[in-house]
Image 1 (cartoon, one colour):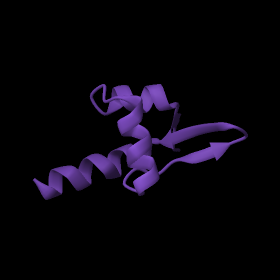
Image 2: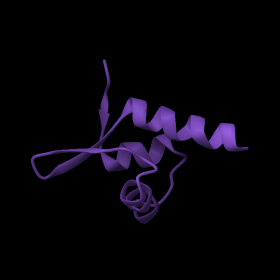
Image 3: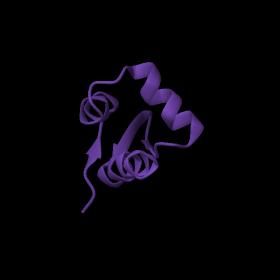
Image 4: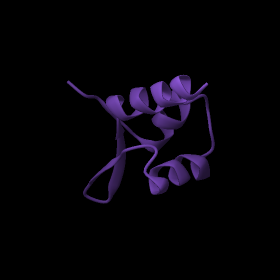
Length: 58
């Protein structure tokens, strides 16, 4: 089961990057997210996929 992270939780999971960087990643499609009502969440799988893509590119 996928856990949904708030934007702040996702920031921390990605090393404490800024909110503007998180939103840039979401807007560019590099980091998947979903909206529920007026809130935006980032699934565990999206964080894992993003990290894996960066490791593979290194």
